[in-house]
Length: 340
Image (cartoon, rainbow, N blue to C red; front, side, top):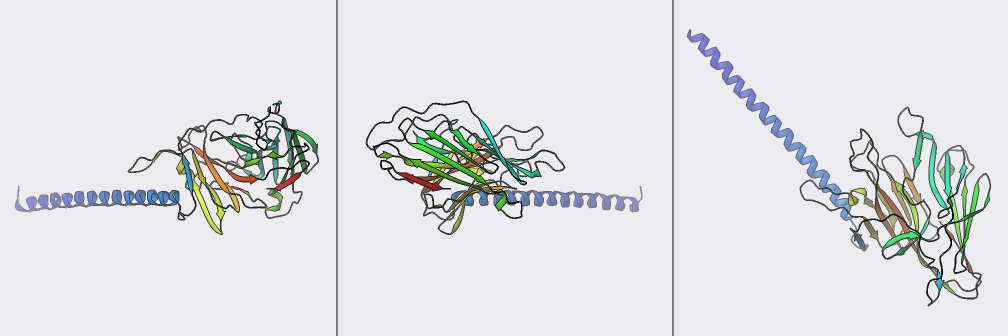
């Protein structure tokens, strides 16, 4: 073998070694960049979870969420024990619709079981429309807190009247208190939010000769489900406006995780602050509840969904939320109306 061949061999050997080292350095740099992006994502999630404004008290519960159950009749005479609960009847469904939405109401809770967006397909080029509020609790349902658990305020309502654009439910509790709930759906077919707006009014009426303490209620905003386009739930949260500032409770609070330190899943996050409006949202759609008077708190909980076949999200967790209101004592013969 001549000297020229030896030099060429050494040249290619050294070149291959340099190329190998260069590729290794490039891989290490790419891995470092991936780790930096993961750290930044974790930092942003943690920052959002901890909230910027620490002045609003937060109550967190890691206790497992129970399925909603029927509450006893907790509207009671001032200073007296609870009276027998109202009867539970078979669930009935009623529908109101316009060009843009179809709203399905349930007699259980006298509230919105689901909202179908008639003009938005759930999948690209699909035929099935988007359906909002996939949780176990109807949107705009009224609940009470019993031993830390949210339970329906009244189990069953009767549909008193229904028109093309409105429906009225009522129930008489064992205490004698009468609840009437009216929902109105806009018939406006124009653009903007009006065709998607459901107006709601609830009346508490005391026909007895005894003052009754209604105390506190929770009005459910609804449930936002995770999407396949956002498997990590970066855009999935319960949000609200408090004292002019936007706040959010990310769905990551209700799922185990953490890149470097293990984070336990929380089942309930309560923010005690004045709430002008509350919402639940995912990457594409938002359900907003705007009460006539501000709420005293917002309570968010995790909702687990079954994994979809082929989805990258193996532990789908949505978010549900409710606003808390304090109601005054009802005098004999008094009616109070609330618009939410």
